[in-house]
Length: 69
Image (cartoon, rainbow, N blue to C red; front, side, top):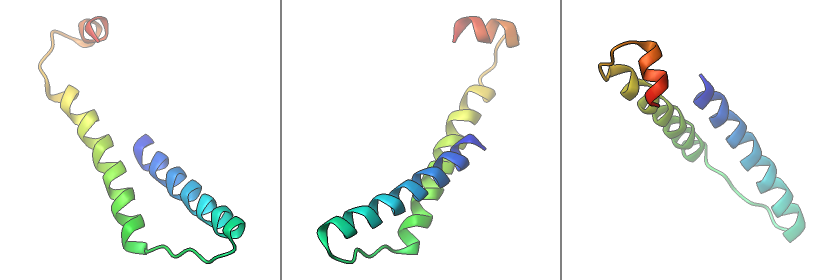
């Protein structure tokens, strides 16, 4: 959930920066929806991988896992 929210925030910031830079340079900057979808998908995938990997490793218990990491 956090990586999805982070991906949305990153997309919003990127669109804002694109608008500001285009305004400062006096030109119109294009963006593609497919690129935005890929960026959001990668952010969500990275979040899922880094959450699921530690959850699959066998540990003695939650307290022991917190002590080690």
